[in-house]
Length: 142
Image 1 (cartoon, rainbow, N blue to C red):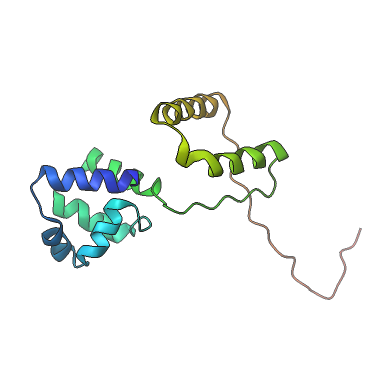
Image 2 (cartoon, one colour; image 1 turned 30 degrees about the horizontal axis):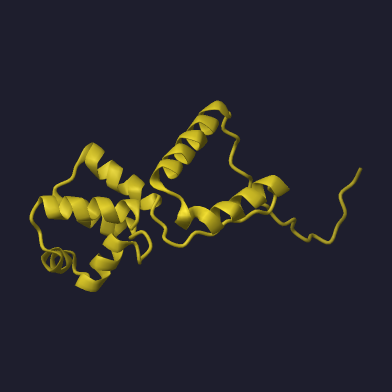
């Protein structure tokens, strides 16, 4: 289950809404809504998240929380290690291999460690997009 799916299920059941009724209101299949709740589908589109917030009556902080959880809820992760150190690459691969077997306390401790490391590290600017030089047929003068 993903963080988004878990929260969606809690919100729905707290309100006594059946999955099939919510799916019908959102114009999605009950199977799709079930897959979202159980983490078998990727994060929904921004439009569907907006529909869910409207349907459940979520505003402000509650709606923002659901949107943030959707961003954290990709069931299939890709890790691009180009430009990372060998140690960073090894760590990413090790986490990918062992995450399923970690107990909840270890996962919580890892979250805290990463949060502390992120808070202590100044943010670096986002990488610049690489642009291709236009072929003009002339060479630059020195």
